[in-house]
Amino acid sequence: MKTKRLILMLLVAFVTSSAMAQKLKMVKFTPSVNNPIEQMGLSLVNKPNGTMYRLREDIQIKSLKPTPRTCNLEQFITEKTDFGYFALYRKELRADDYSFIVTLYNEKADMFDEIDLNEVSDNYNCELQDIRYEKGRLYYNFACPSYSSGLNGQCSSLYCFDIAKNKVIWKTPYLTSNDIFIIHGNYIICGYGFTGEKDYVFLVNKETGKVLSKVLIKSSPQYIEVKNGHIFVVDYNDNVYDFVIANK
Image 1: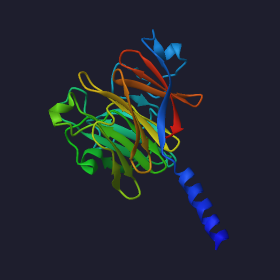
Image 2: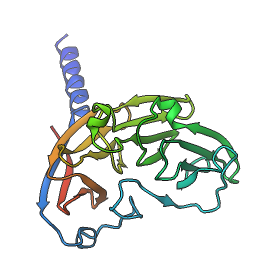
Image 3: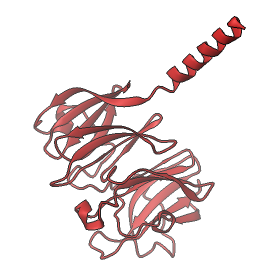
């Protein structure tokens, strides 16, 4: 009995250790960096259109054709996937309302499915700023168009849409993501901030959407990139934050 009890205790300890909660740990803060992307040796790979705008524009595949449903929309993001390609279409930036449609293409660039993100997310008042694909899932955000008070703070969540299940499987709390975000291992790193509001960087479990860590920073995060295992965040005032993921 003692042996069984010892084995059970060891198993519990192992599982507890393996499931230990993670957090963002800041290891360095560099204030007001002149040209921070260049000075920190970053590449802008996660936001090739630059940091001036919140929206990521990234046309990696130029040969994908719009469909009858998207022919009057603008193509903003195209990427290669394990099934072929996907493209994000939206109304022009100055439009009075929003429409965000993802088109899925096979390896021959033939369309086989379309997803109305406004419809599946039940969100028609917010603006998509970024979308990423990984292993059958689309991760995207719907950000407050301006101050969060305009929508009573009910905006800027991250969503995860499972393509095979054809539904949103999780959504983060509000005020979690209103700019680009990145997928890094088992996590999503994202940020929220706006003029006169508090500014944060978040660590999110990509399987569940649970916020694991939340770090207050000085200004709205505008760019995120992983370099040499470190997570670099550049904010609106060109401050640079160097994070690692550590155990709580």
